Amino acid sequence: VHDHHRPQPTHTQDTTAKPYDGPSIELRLHEEVIDLVDAFRPTKRERALRTAAVANLTAIVRTLWKAARVHTFGSFDTGVFLPSSDVDLVVLNAGGASKPQQVAGLRQIEWALREKNVGHSLDLISKAKVPIVKYIDVETGVPVDVCLEQKDGIVSSTFAKKALAKFPAFRHLTLLLTMWLRERGLNDTFTGGVGSFLLQLLVVSTLQHPPRSNNPALRGNLGALVLHFFETFGLRFNYSDVGLRVDQG
Image (cartoon, rainbow, N blue to C red; front, side):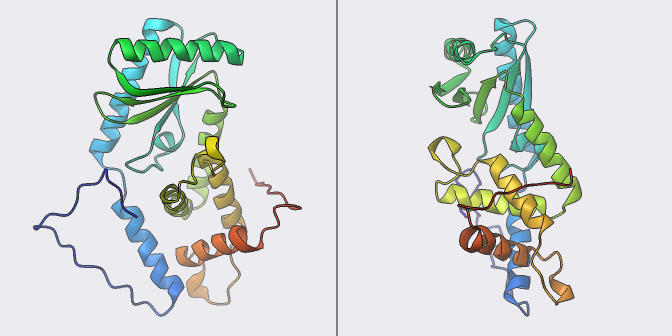
């Protein structure tokens, strides 16, 4: 997986490929997944840039509605994000109960971002189920998505944090599969792709129903879980007749 936001290796860096020579494909894949997630682990600078982008939007919102509050949700809120991931924000207490009111409020945010030169590449998506403003923060270069009065994202972030605490493999599978979807343009719900919350549900279901194996070495093995995920949802799941239920909290 190539990410243009990461600096490319210089001549002073050791670029020798690590050999994966385990006794099985599952064990070799396990090591590769760990290395991939470690390579894309957010740096302090990447976290700081996103925090600054949130502060910039918060300052804009306060000029529009004194009682409004900006909350993070999604991958940045849970810490499971890639260098190229958007920052998802929701503005509450802005007085936008209905969808037309939310669109009107987002237009105000869009206008203020443009007027104060805080955001560029602005795009108001008003016809989506949840209207949003997409833009890139001028100061930091961080892509941001903003919605109004939508609490579902905060709820889904709470769900993801519970999954992170309960399943050690949740972070690895979610990041790997997020990369896989993005490389194929399949991660945007607006165009029919698999969004982050749906992906999290699929991952949790996989971890609640792991692959059966008589080999103790493969219990909790990330490679086996990846293969099980693709076999289940790519080959065997009967989408016409079967639904998914994530239970146990």
